[in-house]
Length: 452
Ligand SMILES: Cc1cc2nc3c(=O)[nH]c(=O)nc-3n(C[C@H](O)[C@H](O)[C@H](O)COP(=O)(O)OP(=O)(O)OC[C@H]3O[C@@H](n4cnc5c(N)ncnc54)[C@H](O)[C@@H]3O)c2cc1C
Image (cartoon, rainbow, N blue to C red; front, side):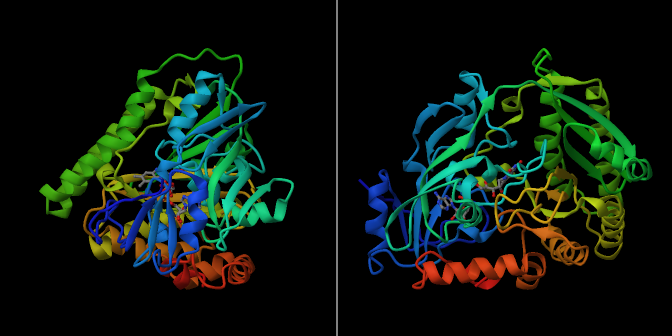
């Protein structure tokens, strides 16, 4: 039976403002049509909520009805080359269940909190191994959803265009309750690091991107350095649980944000603060240097479950993607932008910026590598004072450089950023939405402002 969950109307677990009037937790998919069909009891917007881990208000159901999909949490079937799961299953639970059977997703994110429903309809780019598969939704081969009119619908890869639109729909074309994902045999991944001065990175960029493997980059703006993390699939390699990798994860995700946060709150003099932060950056480099000799692991080993409530992670980031061919120049301009922002506003991010190399992927309309191969820049922070203003300026910088944002991971977006990056793709989505949901049951104010 659908559960009405009581909680204060202004509760906000994520640090991002949301204010539903009604919060429901369906436990069967056939409860959803009844909710969509009763606008008086369950006011618009009706917004499905997965892990509530997005960096933006894409999930917000201000004054409307939030559907916590966590009640639909069964992995239903492991079949030949695929797995069927309900929308509320967390990707961490799914990946572990697959690993027990010697299987894995073709792409594995670093956090396990993401729900399978959100994975299928949002933009989650990951370091990619080849064309056509650079974001998690491209692993989805079938979706079952309830349309805004309360109709049951099943869409598969055979309906390529419809699938492309649904994979970018953020719950605005229907509530997804079941998903089929492609899987493959568990394959060891060899991981190597190479720390390069920016000039060397730029000079060797073609060689770096044409060599096999997926690339995750770590951009140190104030040291003018790029650390290249290469992940190569290697069926023959022996997997050894590596302490170094655990240290790397811990430094990247725990130590740096925590350190930055305490530095930010304890030291007010910018000169001293930056001296300490540089020490942290040096510690990070030393850790990566120790790991440079090569580590072999399975992808699920790098996945971590963050706290249930996103704000407790004390880590926040934003994400834009840029055409791969321009990336060395853009990294140089990004470093210069960070320095000039610091000079002008006395603020600098206290965590290295991440970056993923993405092959072209047209599997979804809002894929950030839709037009061609791309690389992301992901400034990260513990969310200290100055971060929000930094992002406002960074968005203008990124948009001027021809960047593409996402609706779930790019903070402080403006409508002009979206229309410049998405152009016809945004207009096409808007037209489809207006036709399929004329009563606006599913669209919230966030998307109305950016796309509507
Ligand atoms: C600290 C932190 C670290 C992170 N690190 C990473 C990382 O390393 N790699 C990475 O890929 N991601 C990372 N993310 C997650 C990323 O920001 C995702 O945007 C987010 O987790 C999406 O999954 P979710 O289940 O939380 O979706 P939610 O935030 O709950 O929802 C996202 C969108 O999907 C819609 N939706 C949810 N469920 C359904 C459904 N069943 N049917 C239709 N629509 C639905 C919602 O309405 C909303 O529009 C991180 C997030 C945080 C906060």
